[in-house]
Length: 238
Image 1 (spheres, rainbow, N blue to C red):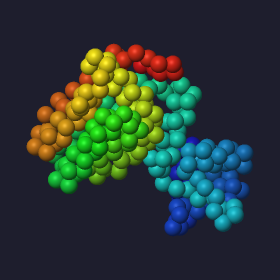
Image 2: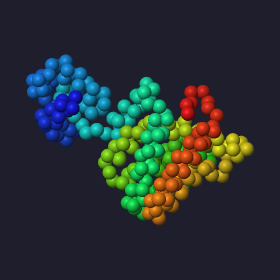
Image 3: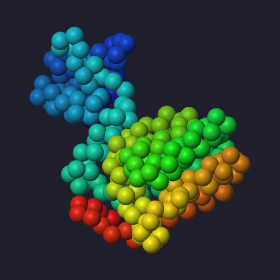
Image 4: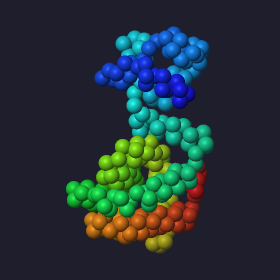
């Protein structure tokens, strides 16, 4: 497949939409492949969201996007080849590893945008609007990745974003339930799940990498403990 991909890049014609590819017959001849093998490879690229047809029959190869990677992660989750625990662990490794770099580079405008997301997250949680809290939570972490201005980091997060939304829906519900139970059945004024994000922002504002790492690690440790304490409902997983 690597050789086939290199062939597409070499023989493709640049257009505004991507690389316009030669016909299946020409690709087979150029690559010394059977037509069936060429169709199989093209079908795989199409499933991955990297290939589309334009103007009737021409195949156009696009650069990979987070959406195409996200679709693959979603399928893997549905097939149970990837678990919520896998997504949680990958996210934790990514963010604890990168937060020191964010502390060095983050701009004042990004700090204000992070504060806004924390406020929206807290208000949504307090109002019992879990969907809005999830979107604010995702936006917060997306801003952290974006602040690095690194295309590989952006692609990694965009690829995980669809799966993260699914896991956050379950994990936040479990964590907030645990906090309510620990608070004698009443909703606290501010959930710890949300409040720890403020500590992250404060460390970033001070450009304190060590404090940022500590705050992010606390975020995941606290979240993990709450999820473990929460009672499971039907269909939920640790």
